Length: 264
Image (cartoon, rainbow, N blue to C red):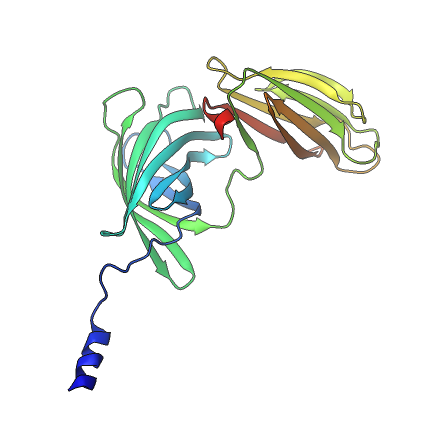
């Protein structure tokens, strides 16, 4: 009798022991709208970070990495129902056609794993930015991916007004020459890289929340491709970035205003 009872207990489900799945990472999916919207189909990327059951991160809604909306979100994982509730906040920046308006979304998702594939599935709804007008709701499937679609363009969040940019030739000085554009406007033109910096400044604040810095290669020097070390000074913080440009592809860095960046 004791053996039979033990066997039955082993077959019963165990309640209250469910663990929060590892949700940290990059999740990508597509969203299709049957009516309205700027694009009939566009991509969604959620960059999730967790602290216990609390969830935070950044969301990207985009047709490609040059036409996108970036927002931050917060939420919770509710282990009793095994669901994530995520709520997007205000738009950090967006680069979409002028007749398009972002939608601030809320998500209710559940984690699934089949073999090596991990997905988040559920529903979303939302409101048009700065209004109470509802967005067209829908369903959503996100798959965990190894890398962000935006990995090629670094994004730096700052809360200071004036940002210093110093461009150096990386390693050996070999005659590299560059032009630097900010939001497609030329800031430096046909300047040679050296061990002494090419210095310029940009303004990032409430009136200038987004600045895209683009380095174009005027030539490739003696040792292709054209590489530069960019040292960014933003208040008390500094960043070192290696930029690589060719005669067919420029290098870009994006700066986004965030009032709480200095505290992190």
